[in-house]
Image (tube, rainbow, N blue to C red; front, top):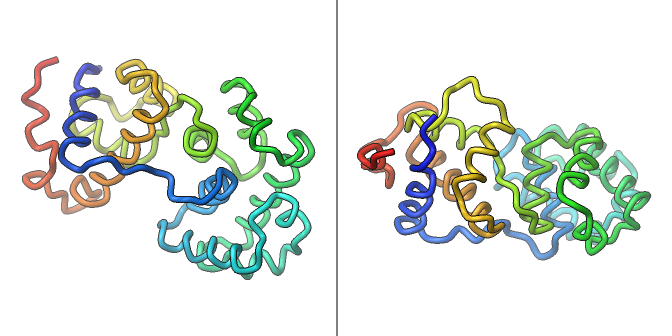
Length: 218
């Protein structure tokens, strides 16, 4: 595995594309809701669902817990899989209230690995969603691995296709500064490249900011 180009990729993308300043939200709890809703859909659809929740003043764990599944599902319809995601939001909100009093400041005080385990124990939250919550809502130093990460790093011969989520995460974290802002920016920048240049099909390699990155020696 070639690893020392990871920081070069980060610097190149930051210089070419500028800071992404993720995650767009008014509160940490809104980030959590967005992370859960963004599974298997695009952000534009998530925004519509969040706007529905805001319209009815439901963006608190207490109000989501008390909202009926039928009403919540209807409001989440723009995000897709709305019946499933309404249960996911309920699951999280109930556990959040039970275990941490619905208090974000209490969550932030929990050690990262313990908090990650707690998140993964909640039905509807997988590794990518858990890590998105950890870094973007709670400022923990973790890197989010997604399909864009795997595609871009694989195409640049930095990882092999059979690496597991945690192996890729560890590789990136070891080769970037231990800083939640940097780790978050790198993930966001890779998403930007994956959506606009390094596509699943019809990639635009000549236009990509990383077109010359393979020339950097390991």
